[in-house]
Structures are given as structure tokens and as C-alpha cells.
Length: 201
Length: 71
Image (cartoon, rainbow over all chains, first blue to last red; front, side, top):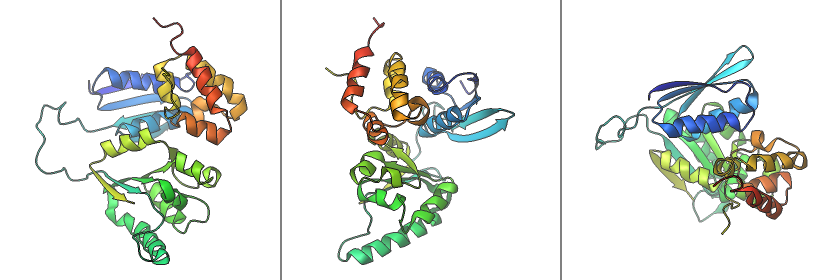
């Protein structure tokens, strides 16, 4: 099963996502276009596909939206054995569990982390996802020195996931200014989907 | 044994039992948003924290309908 179109116009959330899930669960889908007629469905279907490793494109069609998800066929579904070298254009996930880099001097550590976040863009297209947990969530809130850098990364297509439990713990839920609030299942799923995980804790 | 836990997302819960969608709809007014629209990928714990809902009551209400109508 390679390419499918699914008409979910007239359906309210969560039905477009449920129907998309049913189609994907039923077989290997490389490309799927879901037609929806409201912004919430557009966001949720896009997000759902993204979580499953699809590259997502949204096109406006009058009052409707066509949300298209495409992903490369897996080696297994293509009947190929995995090669020894990772493919070029790998997906890198950076897990940040701190608001300072290294130990020894906290001020130095904070400055180093600001520098680190500012330099992350040099990874280019391979930087796929940034996950902020524990004190790392403080980077995504009002007043953070790296907020503009993170917003720029997100704008360029990097997925920024911010631990909801951690935001709640630090009482920062309302101050979050960048990224999607997420949970542990989501974080684990993204780590599994990534080609390389770089932890910074 | 509880079938619903606080780490499950709204979507996880609805996929497990479609009847739970009605429960979430009943909480929309208290949350001030459509939970199935705005919080589909959030865990129940996060939803409760973010929208000021009683997590234990939400879990109990969801448990109350899971499995109903299914054989």
C-alpha cells in the first residue's frame, strides 16, 4: 500500500486522527493525504503523522486543507537488509535535561549552554528534534536567554518538545513560549524514531 | 486493575475505548477548551494540570465507561 487519500471533511476532532491511524495501522503507507476542513484537525493530523516519522506538508484548498504525510519505505517493507553505514540525512534528536553545560562553575555552564543552543543550527537539516526535560524546560519559557534561538530553530522546521510534567513541576506551564508540551511516551517514541540521540544532561 | 493511567494521552484513551470521547466532551466546559482538539496528544496528568481539572475524578469517569458496550 503506497499512496492513499482520506477525506475527513465534516469530521470533528478526534475523528480525523482516529481515521488516519486506522489507515496507517492497516498497512504500510508511504504517502497519505488527509483532507480536513478545520484548523484543529489540520494541526492534529499533521502532528500525528509527524510523530510517526512522516514529513508533513499542508496545502490550503479553498476552505479545506490537504495534510500530506510522506515517508521513505522502511528497509524491512522494501525487502532490503540494513546496510552497515547510516544513511545520509539522518534524523538527530538532542535531549537537553539541564539549563547549564557541565560542572565546575554554574555561570560558565549557563553561558556555555547559551552558546551550545546558538550553535545547534550548524547541524543543518539533520537536527530533527530537540527535547527539553527537567531544568531544560527553563530554556523554553519567558525570559530565557536562548528563547529566540529556540524559536528560530522551530521556525526552520526543528521539532521542539517540552516535557509537560517538568513545566508543571517548575510551575512554568503558562510561561512556555516555544515548542509543544509533551509527555514521556512521546519522548520515548521520538527517541526510537531518531537515527541518533545526543543526550545533554 | 485500572485500564486508564495518568501517563496515557487523550488519544491513547480514546483509541482504547471510543466511549471515552463523551467523557472528555463533558470536561470541555470546565477546561475552557475542546480537549479532543487542543489536548489530543497531552497526557491525562498534563491535561489535568494545564486546565485545572480533578485528575482522580477524570480517571474515575474514564474508567467508568471503558469497556462499556464492548464484549
